[in-house]
Structures are given as structure tokens and as C-alpha cells.
Length: 289
Image 1 (tube, one colour):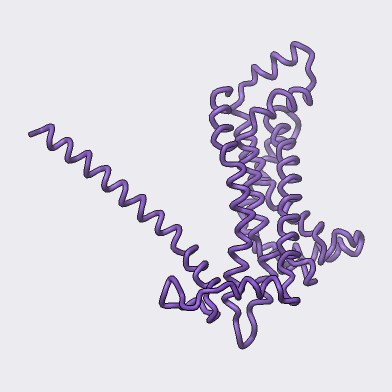
Image 2 (image 1 turned 180 degrees about the horizontal axis):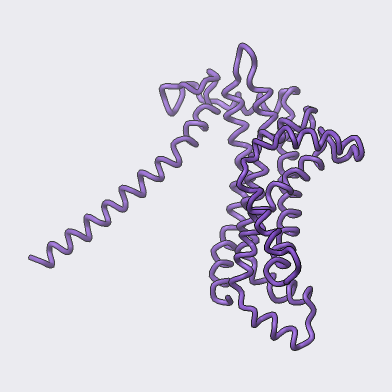
């Protein structure tokens, strides 16, 4: 009787876990299905009573690719370019800074770390006016880094992203035993050789994680890009879709949904390409550390 009760409990536990998993999957997938339905709906509305609309078609996608007022591919390329450059520079600079804070001892080290943490406490929205003013004045000196330039926007992204990333990466550096550094120094290795040949391969898990977070954060940003970019050909995808699909008297929800799905493809590709490296890198890092 007791074994039967235990079996029933196990069965009930499996059922509850499956129900919870199915609920979470439905909760995550339903908004995507609704956007997909809106992108295939020729009536140009989000308030459809059916998940599968009548007269399903690709008119919204044709409108995005064929309309001269919607340079979708240009906006998509701008988003990918800005996010990729920001990610590469952010990860590179953050890694060097975190290594210095973790392994080197110099005057003002603790003060600088606390200052970086303190700056991150304040919301970024509070600095929008200051950022706009700084970029405007900086552009009068170096036009290539001023308003309506991708380089200026990338510089702003770098300044806002490296604070938290430095703390995350420093914490990961601290988990790597210092015995690795000391044994390499005994063999005559320099700090750069220790960093590039010994420590950097062990940092792959956190490098991949920070790279993905930086790419997604800049790819999906709207506020900063809307403030600092003014030309149509300079817009990233998020800004372009918002401005050119929201009219004063009519809102093009169908093309907006179609563009949102197309814009999600690079993020999906990044996850698919790096998912094995994330899992494998975390396992190797745990073993080597």
C-alpha cells in the first residue's frame, strides 16, 4: 500500500512538472504567435479575434521589402553593425580592465571599483540630456563622433555597458586560482602572456555571456538611438520601424509586426550559433577553475 502511494506521488509530481512546463512554454510562445498572426493579417490590426486570421497572406512582408519609404535592409544592417562593433569593443576593453582590477595592485584600485559601482546605481534615463549635450559639443570638435553618426552612438553605448560588465568579469577572474599566474611567472611569462595564453581561454563562458548581453542590449535599444540619430539612412531597425509605421491618423500594425519578426532573426541566429559554446564553455571553465 505504501509503495503504491509512493508511485502515485511520483506520477503526480511528473504530471505537475509537465503542466508547469507546458504553461511556461505557452506563456512564452503565445505573444510570438500573436505577432506572427498580425504580420500575416491583411486587415492591418493587432486586435484580431482569431489567432489564424482570414485571408492569410504575405502582403505586409511585400510592403516592407518593396516600399521605397521603408529601407528595411538598411535599418537591419545598421542595427547589426552597431551591435557587433559595440559588442567587440565592449568585450575587449572590459576584459583588459577586469584583468587589471583583479590581478594588478595599484593606487586607487578600490576607489575606482566603488566609483564604477556607484555610477551604475543611477538610471540611464537621468543622463539623456547630458549625453545629448556632450555628443553635440563633442561633434563640434570631431564631427565623426557627433550627432547622427553611428560612431558617436557606439561610444555612448560603450560608456554605459562597461561598468556592470567589468564587475561581472572581475568576479570571474577572481575565481581563477592565482597559482596559475605564479607558476607562469616562475617560468618567465609576462603579464600579457599570462592574460592571453592562460587566463583568456578560461574566460570563455563569461566572454560569451557578456557578448550576448551586449549585443542584445544595443540591438534592441530605442531611446538613445532615437535621440542621437536623425537621418533615415542612419536609423537602426527599432527606430525606423517605429517612426515609419506609426502615422498620425493610421498605424501600420501589420508591417510593424512583420518587421519585428524579421528583426528578431539575428538574435535567434546568435543564440543558435553560441548555445553549444555557452554550455560547453561553462562546463570546461568549472573543471579547469
